[in-house]
Length: 97
Image (cartoon, rainbow, N blue to C red; front, side, top):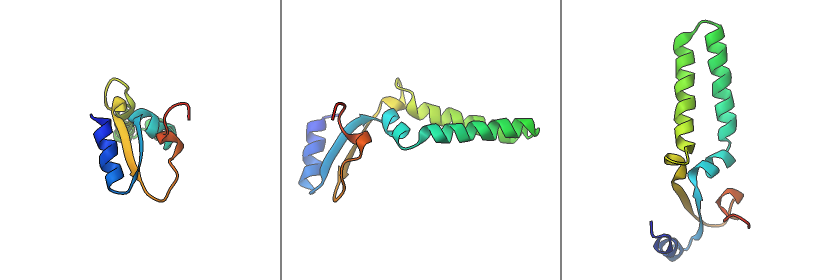
């Protein structure tokens, strides 16, 4: 991706550019670890109660969430946003700022 052109396009719309940041980092900052923990609790409870299909669905959710953060896959995609009227969220600021 030509981030210079993306930035220029966002700015031409009157928006403040933010990013790019790896999707995995953004999702973690937005609470993905808590979602994974909840899915694990659901999985454990379902399996303990003999609800195999519900346990399998919880496992599938955990795997899907994991795919979104895999740094060699979807987690390596870059997130870039255009903001207006708000401060740049920490998870979209460049590293070291």
